[in-house]
Image (cartoon, rainbow, N blue to C red):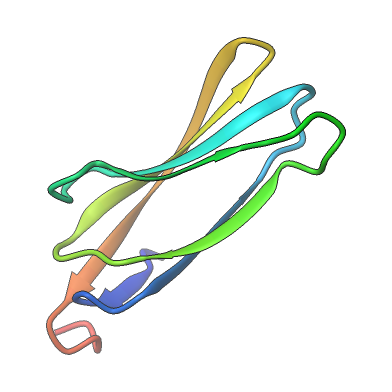
Length: 88
């Protein structure tokens, strides 16, 4: 099912990678005024796992982009944003 969030309320989001040599993880919100919501540099030898809270003004695709071995990988999910937070 599509996650639902109340407009402009913090939305918890997380990404964990099992790919080798992860150097960064970024979150993008396609319909936000500033698409790049967060970027994390992953130090060598650490577990590539990050979490944050994002604010969204309208329904959008949220994209996690992972850099591993000099290549980019992504996963996305649609998030429905409502005025009341109850699907209305």
